Length: 332
Image 1 (cartoon, rainbow, N blue to C red):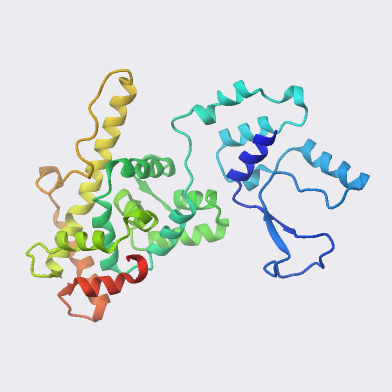
Image 2: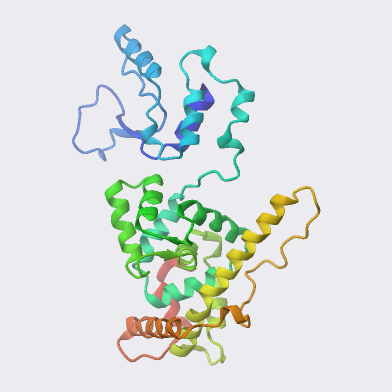
């Protein structure tokens, strides 16, 4: 029972707002210090009177409010089993540990608070900053990319490799946003994505939530990769070439991870070699990553927009210092 209460609190994304003391005068403003978030399943009694304690037991008999959890059916079922009011009908620990939610490798994942913030802010990011984040995403360690791949696939309900408005809205709602707030956020994310968010854009949007990656040194490394001729500036043409190939590198890495995971599942007892290298493989010379004419045109348009947004129309190159100022306090 106690562990069930703790699990409920960990999964709760919509806590009750309770007054700090029954004696406190009710207020219409919940940020006046007299209210607090209560994450546990059953509202505690306001006093120790017989009627208050009886009402508290009745709430326990009715069971927890699972709508506050915003998680999958399997997690809901586990919480209900652990918080069954009658002890004889409550599952034993051996049964709890064998529950499908704890054992499943395909357990539905939920966006973390930092990831939600990154997704909400991405549409406000300058086009050049988005391109840099895309390049940084292509340099993610494979272990971290695997985690983001699993999260993306959990959100991609129809398995078409793209996140549409409904899928984004559902994921953001489960992460704790109100339905209308989640819908509006999904619309903003899709505005520049052609009606859907592909894997590469999804990973780039989440880079700011990977705090260990955000450093001036890494930004400098990304800038140097863009500066192909080493003149200390990134030109519009260099940025265009980045936009043409970065998404392909991430797509190749995603496919590589999926194939490797299938092999590991089929031969989990066999000794298989680990990842070759710590980064996404370079696909710049891969014939499968050759860019089409339409993709090249889209990349050229995005590069021109990125430079125009920095200091007005017509700019054709940018220095590292200008890029660092553009990204503000995200890199230290």
